[in-house]
Image (tube, rainbow, N blue to C red):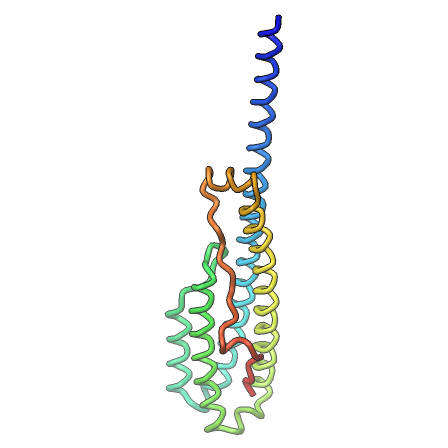
Length: 185
């Protein structure tokens, strides 16, 4: 009789442990998907920012055909940011974007009438809007990664995280060129 109670007690503990592991695993999956979703939001804003840059290239084309073609090649060769991209891949994309913007600014310096163009002005406004959206999305990403990494580091969930290979996620660091809002105009 006593051994039956012991077996039932062990079975209950094992079932509770299995249920806890399942719940913890599912929480990790949820948090990981939140991180991927946050990166997806960044990717969407970056694509919109590049689309706005493409509009600026169209406005630039009538003033500097060669520069417009060079910028189109930069856009064609970039690797798009995806929900499973790393912060490092986003930083490389930002560097390509900043390089393209620097080239457009050089064209604007040579053609002041381009700055007065209504099409160019609208495109510049869109780039600024999406640049702000990217910054906001990065903050949201870092908040989401904080929640994931915190859960991953807490005992006893760290055991399940290690057991199922839930790796630490990287944050976006503030690079020297990104600490201040860009001045495109």
